[in-house]
Length: 77
Image (cartoon, rainbow, N blue to C red; front, side):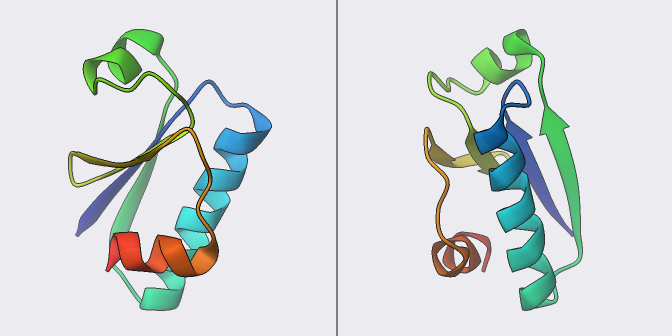
């Protein structure tokens, strides 16, 4: 099972990133868990300076932007 984490304070971009990740994971038929990480100390623990950020299985994949659905599928595949 993939662990997908969205790092951010809950802003509009953070919500959009979560929605795109969810849609891409479903399109790929992945078994996954989606977690929203909003605590600044946890976000800093990933070494992320810009939000929103996408973490897949503990690896930061994207920070500071929201990828397209197609880009997201590649990041999750």
